[in-house]
Amino acid sequence: MLHILRWWILSCSEAPSSAIQGLAKEHLEVGPSCPDSAPVGPAAQSWLQHVGPERGQVLAQTAGLVAALGREVPAALLPPELLALQQQLRAALARGDDSALRRACERVMDSPAGAVFARDLQDGMEHLRSTFRLPPSWSVECMVRGEGRLLAKREVTEPKLLRLFDGLVRSTALPSVRTRDRWGAVPRSFRAVRAVQIMNAGTWSSYARRRDVVAQDCAKLKARTDGGFWRDRLNGELLTAELTAAHPEVNAAEPLVPAANEVWLFHGTSHDAAEGITTDDFDLTKANPSGLFGAGVYFAESVSKADEYVKGKVVGGVELFPLLLCRVCLGYVYYCEDRRPSARHLEETCLLKEWHSVLGDRKKTSGTFREFIIYDNLQAFPAYIVYYAREF
Image (cartoon, rainbow, N blue to C red):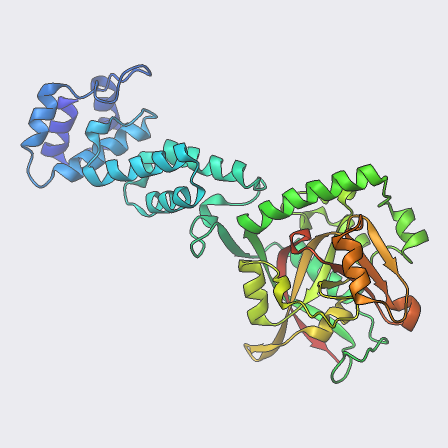
């Protein structure tokens, strides 16, 4: 070790990497059972104390070389600031402190010498992925940088996904249907312009746990969730079902869970609310208790219905509207075909009894739309924000 440290001082980074690696392999005798201090003997440590201002750089470069060779970096090779960073990461991992671990991972990634801790960083990332049940396709590296939480919002660039979103807003448009909630003319059609994928660890973890419970409840109740049940008992299959089933790439996280009656539905909102919901979650304290079906979170299978509640913003000369494409666990569905339903009764049906959601069939009673309501915000995960334009 003394040889390679001296070599770094004398030649700095002028020698080719092959020479550096050759010296490292020759002089670094690090075995898996060696303690951290073993590779650096007393003579080397004494010599290190007398190295001038280059000491930190020498240590960082040498530690990086050791890491690049796939060896455990000895603590004696780490400058104080890097040693403290490593200790923070390992301590957070040992405690299972996910918030501290995220911060430590972010600091390691931002450090110029972060490659030194590649193994520790990988362990930290895998712990976060496992703890929050994050899908394999999600980038934990991107998520650790997310606004003080495990969160990333990724611009969708895949042509197949963008065509799917455009197909969804076009195929579920019902321009001939108008309700009292509609202001102005009914758009003839819609065009998806761009989309953002949401990777929110906290929201996803809560959703996945709740989905497990809903699936277990449905199994105990022997609740049917198949297409035949939708056709025979719920007035038809979902407008979103066929297209999303034909394009499994929309399930970027993981496939839908039929046992929980998990489906894709729309939620129309404003630009600011779309950002807030995808960063935090649906906030039931803001639910309208005077809503037709009570104080819940409302979803639509038709973009024309969701479009009644959006607020646009002009972007690049085009007015764009935000649409949340959500995974929703409907579970055991309470079918409501009353023209004047009791909102409190529906709330109690799902909050106090065995049902998980309400399907309000205004398509049958009024010739308009079916609406889907949940009274537990953990039963929905906003997976994408689809920005679209209206066509008249």
